[in-house]
Image (cartoon, rainbow, N blue to C red; front, side):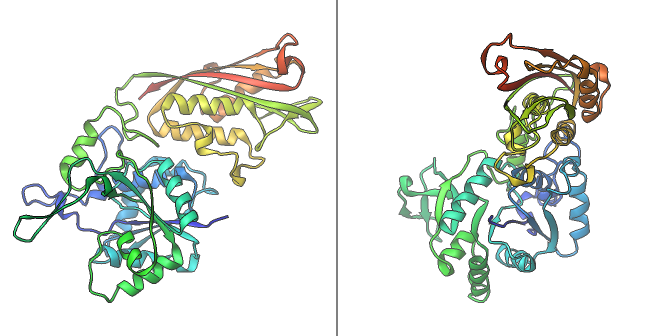
Length: 415
């Protein structure tokens, strides 16, 4: 398995975020919105990095003397503590330098003892990166050795001389705008940075430096939503939008008291030799459900319903079946983690209603235990949770005893 690390350069001075000559707070610590206390640009990046579940190590470079302050600002985001410690990457804060290249080099050096295979470098001022884009860049990096996400230019670009006159008319169809994260073979990027350290040149991104000293850089599709916060109006414009796009939305829903419905379904084949687990309760049965984890259809459907209602994704986003970390996992533990994420996004559970369809054994004797288990995982009173059991009247795969299904509906209220 590829060992991937993330480097977030955040040691700049934020000079362009000044208003009328007055300094504002360093932009990486600025709040994204007043509706989510504690969420700043830097913490949003870290949440999305953890959500991607692709990194064993994250290094953040900050101004010299600000390590403790940066840690305290990020710690205000309660969503970060909701990620299980066993799946959370090591997060290091290290002093940066006066230039971007020198700060990246300091971050790379801090990774040396951890020996990653690849590293993704992501600007500390791009909080809207999606999990899908992280995965796309990582995949392209593993394939080509170096990859950069780009988007097409919509305005016509011109090369301008020192005197302000146009000297080059660039062909727009061949121009692309580079974004981050930019991915590289770790050893190659380290070598390129150390060679560039003494050449006296200024590089605006790592792909330019790598192309000079490392090798060919390939491109993959970027996202227009992955904007960089450079000027105050950039953040103001994003905050005024009704919704953000992928990943954990910064403004998933802002109106207090708003109601959202989520629907989750799951189905697993039954076979001999497997335990039958529903809502974390062991059901005595000749057959159990097949699956990567404990194949708890009721917990899985509940996870999808919660994530859907909150607009945070689905079970595959957080617990993909291709990830060995979830092999034989207890699904109620995953449900508890999911609820922590939903609650951190300012949602309250109104009620959960579930139907389990299983031909045999009869589930009525276990209904109250299943209700209590779900209520415990969701940190709510059992009266807010109900579970019904049905058969398929011997119809279809459930009726033949070959499968078990669950359907769950949840109602969430914004708080």
